[in-house]
Length: 96
Image 1 (cartoon, rainbow, N blue to C red):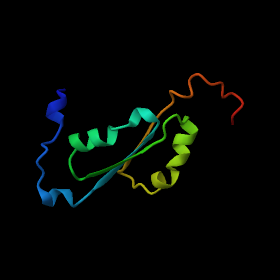
Image 2: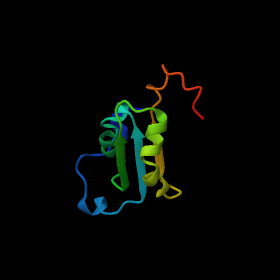
Image 3: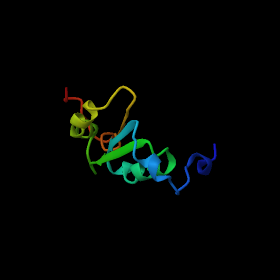
Image 4: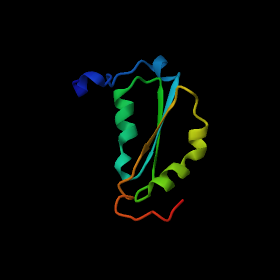
């Protein structure tokens, strides 16, 4: 698929931006920087998109940092947990 065909026009009708039907929450390490802005540019304006960035954090910290916000999501909402690169080089076998 062509990336530019997926993105919406930068000119929005003001009445379309008021109603949000679905939430997307992105939680991750520094690799998620600017991902919310990119999604807002490419998705319909009825999506409410937010991100939580924890540079240098491991997956456990990433998941725990936004647990309260993720628990508030509805059935149709989406949570993206993006991380793991900081855990690859560590030996976490004694955890859990």
